[in-house]
Length: 278
Image (cartoon, rainbow, N blue to C red; front, side, top):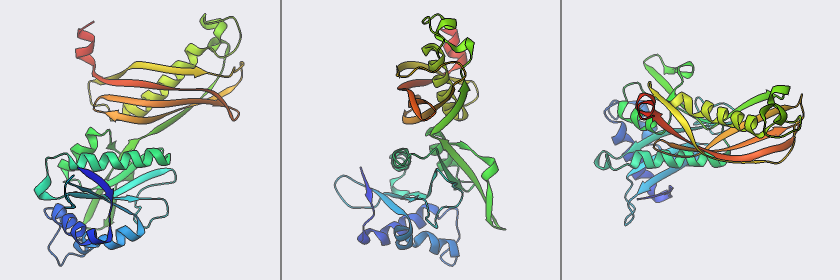
């Protein structure tokens, strides 16, 4: 299977695939929103229209609309956030992982763009789609739920890509206090703990009841000293997710200066089962 930007010759087929995918949730051809779904040409002009095709043909198996900043297709995204719409898979191609592939394309796109999170709206009864989003780490964002019309209620999902925390270096955070050196500057063990906490802040909202996450791999380069009283900002950005494994890039800065950079890998675990093996 391949993914690529839509081409002019694809637009009619994209419209029909989108209408077919939404058929069980929308009305007949007299429904105004059905015409909206079929209008792939406008989406292609005003946003970014992507498709999935077989390796050996140009058949449209699925499609998704990525809504860049300034696009009129953005509905719930705020500054720094990514948004996508109308992820649709042909009814004849369901069960082949096409929806997950297109969703992965969306997430990777906004990672490259530096978005802090990805948001999207969906009908409450689209439960199969919700399962795809949740497997990818999306969680509900009820405060963004909204109604485009009196008859339609939409719910919102979000995937956190970046979290930032701020810390003030105290005497207890120094290398001398932590036993990792003799100087009264921020100790690497404390900085690492702050970085891990930031990664937890990204992954924790997507955890199910009874789940937690554990750090399994750390690479941190501590390149600048931070004396007591320094304000240090730590950021963690999700750069890869594969099932239960989540990898982050982390960075710490103080006063515009880079203090540290690195990568941290976490794995989502079932808490009870994990503890039972100890």
